Length: 401
Figure (spheres, rainbow, N blue to C red):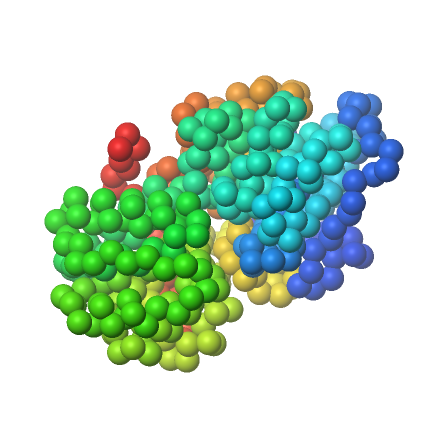
């Protein structure tokens, strides 16, 4: 029987491993005597992700919620009567760790690998998996390059695509009547560069005016950019295509510099943990998968949020809904394929057409192994408090540009 997110959300809280303490994740090193045989007593899934380092704010909620979902499946009897085992190798958010960690887990007999929420970091490990005919799934990569267009035919992501995210940011801005925009791009990741490219393209296509393009590097203050914005044509809205923690510094610099225009960001600025550093922040919008404050329009999301918070504390980012969806995708893919062969699993996942997962309806195609048109949540920070505004699907996706 294929699992569905509504079923998982309704299952009573399973007993999590005694190693999984609140706010932490359960990690295990691969066995010294690995076996890749289908006769193994357990089904090994390997996670090449960041429990520490700058990507941990995104990865840890996904890892924790993947373990919760695996516990639920195991409590219900596992897969073909076998228990699922999740083994995590902490990469420390270091690029050079991803390829060797992937090989280590493949050698240990992993049936599929799960990767960090960033394409730049994860792609070397996914390439190792590709060469070994092992399926790669990321709970939360946003880049469509994590798939065939990036030479990774066995890689899929449950994240909201950067294409759709940028489009939603622009279309929401247009719906608010904002006619002119300045674009601030953190150049350290492909993700943030693409986000502003797609947002700018759609905003100007809708009749908006680009009054300034500025670049910054993660972690730096931007007084010179603030001065240029203040001295130029005042924008109706500012697109801050950044990620935490540096994106929060940019938000603070904008407000400290007297710029009161509304600001909109994407998934890289998800969460609430950074808001205390900017007391009274208002008119700051973020686009992401779901609401983290218990007011999501999907009751299943709020129910799972309550479960997660009871076990680990409040999640730092919305990746807590993506972890279960990654596991659901792997298990449902196996149910379709009847095999752990990477190519056969990939063929199975490509059949997903509005698959109902906790993160939202998910469609994969032979060209795009990420949901392009999934609805996304717009949230606003008012007086330091984040709240849900609306669920919005992109109206037009330009995938051939």
